[in-house]
Each structure stands twice: as structure tokens, then as C-alpha cells.
Image 1: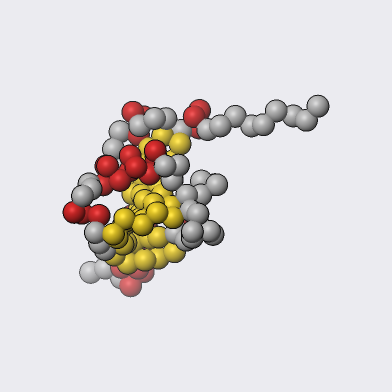
Image 2: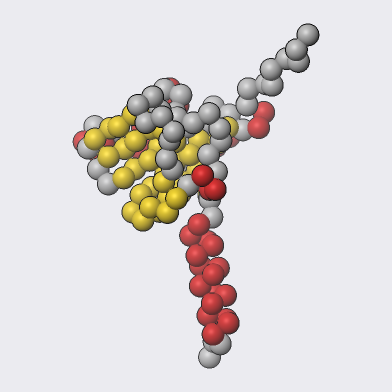
Length: 126
């Protein structure tokens, strides 16, 4: 029979497994990066007018892979699915788990560029 400590450790491991960010698809083949999928999370943007694109009733005209393509083509790095609404989100930094908040039922896809495909640093001032 499992002790209270063992049950807590099992529950902790189960929760950690749910929260683990996992790479999906063949990231190496996707323009130098990969999409990651995060269940039960979302992330807010600073400028909602400039950095968001809403796609209501997305299932009627789109599939997730097509939405990811739209996001990449438009310079968005996050695709958020909230029920029947898809939201493309633009950030000037790499989104990480620390930037997100719990949102049960939501699904978040985050574009993570490969290290060798990030823009080079600006040249030093002369």
C-alpha cells in the first residue's frame, strides 16, 4: 500500500508530465524551428490592437497546421486555441512557460526558432 508521501510523489510526477513542454511535429523540417504544444496554458500580449489576430469559428475554415502557417507568414509566434476562437499572437521575445498563465481548456502552440536560425546580433557601434 502506497504511503502518503509516495502518493504525493506520484501526483507531483503526473502534474510535471502534464506541464512538460513537448515538441510536436518534425521541428527540424519547419523553417529552422519547431512548434511546441501546451495544454491548459495561455499567454497575454502587451498591445492587443497591434499584436493579436482573432479567427472566430476557426474550425469552419481552418486546420491547426494551416493556422500555424498563417501565424508564421504573419510574423506571429503563438497560436492560442480558446474554444471556437483561434488567436494569433506576436511577441518580440521567445515565449517561455514563465510568461504563461493557467487556462484550463485552452491549447497554446509556441514557435521556437532553432538557435542557428535566430537573427544575428546587431553590429557593434563604430
